[in-house]
Length: 254
Image 1 (cartoon, one colour):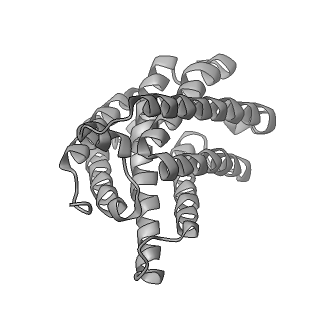
Image 2 (cartoon, one colour):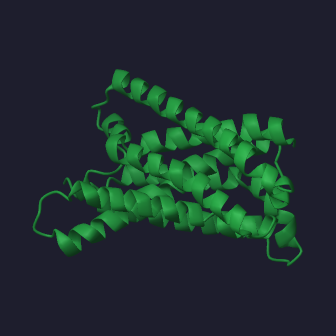
Image 3 (tube, helix red, strand yellow):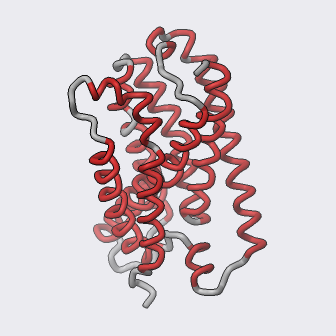
């Protein structure tokens, strides 16, 4: 039974992906929707369906492969199976929020001090309204974590174990770090197409995007490995709230 998929967890994740993709549409429309509309390609319903299918597939694969690697959603699984440590979960959520808020503040400080003053393109970035940023934070916290950590990091670790350590019961720790770092880089690179649509790519904007996404992505990956996807989701969501709801709208304007 241990290696079989828990369909309850999958259905919860698939539903969360669907809702998050819908909530993200106002933010996407505000940032790059007008640009895409000029090419008659932007269809919100198609976008939601595409994200839902991709996210659900990623959740399915990640949950299946993660069982043998000790990766997944242990707190949700415990809750569904009647073995839930409420006090431990509360402490984990507090820790995850603290890390996320710290990352959000740190990213903002680095961005404002070292990137925005030296790039006219960054000064032209559209900063959506706080309510749009709040809704989009569900996309970042849930969908990006499902794609980057649950799917991509897990897949990399599983492939490494199959190729190099098939006969070992557990994958070596360095495999997890490889998967975490590669997933963080994937997470960072995945932001470049939207950046190109909005303000274009320059060496500075590319470096900024890679740096300010790969570092938190690595930390989210570590949280996923050590504490479960629930921790990574909570931390990512908290960081996005700080960035897109509080600091960026205030500092850069709406």
